[in-house]
Length: 286
Ligand code: SAM
Image (cartoon, rainbow, N blue to C red; front, side, top):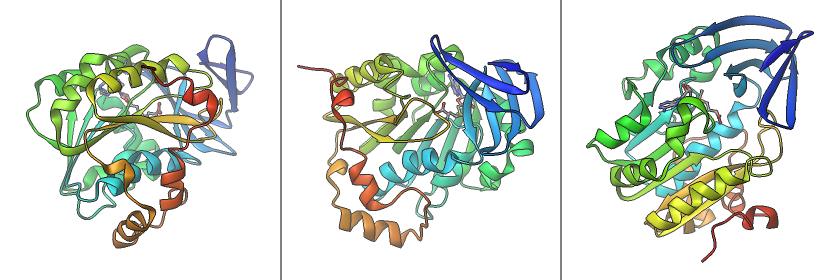
């Protein structure tokens, strides 16, 4: 990403860029792994970028974090142990920890700098999640952790950067194979899988791996304004039946959890799995 004439240009794609006005540049530094920036934008609030790519914003992170947590957790219905890979800003942990029945959250983040920095500059994202006694923060490469861990999880959430730089290893067949081994019976794996209109191969590659590994695989969608290019895809994989959970059961679980979301509803949950033609065409065949 380049800062030019008071704008931040995100150049994740070779031929498409989005620009956000930088009202105030609050932080700009290299960590051991990536370039960390946060700036104020009048429409999105504080914006976090890593290696120039928008990671999350105060204004619209609720959509992404609600859909990558409450969909698998409410579909599962009895999640007690959750694993988050990535998620250094704390927003994913915030939403998972809203579920009082979740007893333990392991968060494996490669860059301690993102965590420390987010606590200081983006406290509105984690909202105290890092202080929750149920959260265990592990600073490590998620691929190394998944390969060597022995714990089982009911829900695994891959909240990584895009498959460039440190995030690349989190989009491989071997990583997904190790993730499957870490799932308890009926467990669900969900992944941040980019914007299919601009990153079609990313989705197809992940789902090809899921198809080979899991009985039920697919994706669901949500539009996140700061992830430019149309709806974002979330990979879904499980050997269980959770995808078929009826809306009335989701509604009962949603209300029992005392959630009051700004994007997620049980109806949106089910509708998110209805895929438009151009996304269906990206699903691996055969
Ligand atoms: N919402 C964002 C998105 O959709 O791109 C993701 C946000 S979160 C900040 C992404 C996190 O993944 C970052 O904190 C980054 O340090 C972490 N990360 C990248 N590669 C990783 C790896 N191999 N293991 C663990 N964490 C990783």
